[in-house]
Amino acid sequence: MKLKKVVILLAFFLFFAGSLLASNVATILNYPNPFAPPAQSTTIYYSLNNDANVRIYIFDITNQLVKRFNFSSGSSGGIQGTNVATWDGISDFGDVVSNDVYICNVVADGALIGRCKIAVVK
Image 1 (tube, helix red, strand yellow):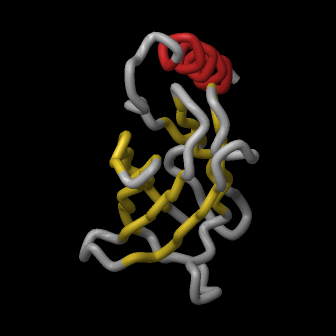
Image 2 (cartoon, one colour):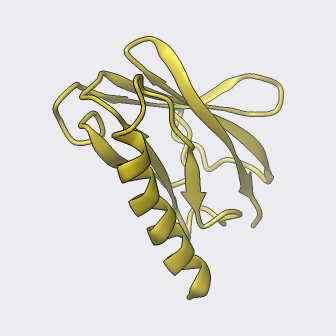
């Protein structure tokens, strides 16, 4: 419960800190981490200084693309301020991912704005 409050506070901080940045550079957080799909999903939090076209790429440790999210500028996931994306642990091929560490890259308008590691433990 305390961890959830910390994540909410960090998301709140990202919202205000993001407004001070000259470009879309963000700290990327996800909760819970680790998570156990398919029973659990993880939520990825990131902040944008301006509306932007956002792409989130999740890679396995061999650098193979596992999941991709696309958000248009001005729509949910691509708006100024704090944004969230939820990953259920299902790959773009429809498979539940295996126990591993995954790298999450968040790209806004073609520029990498941040990354995080996501652990899957079932």
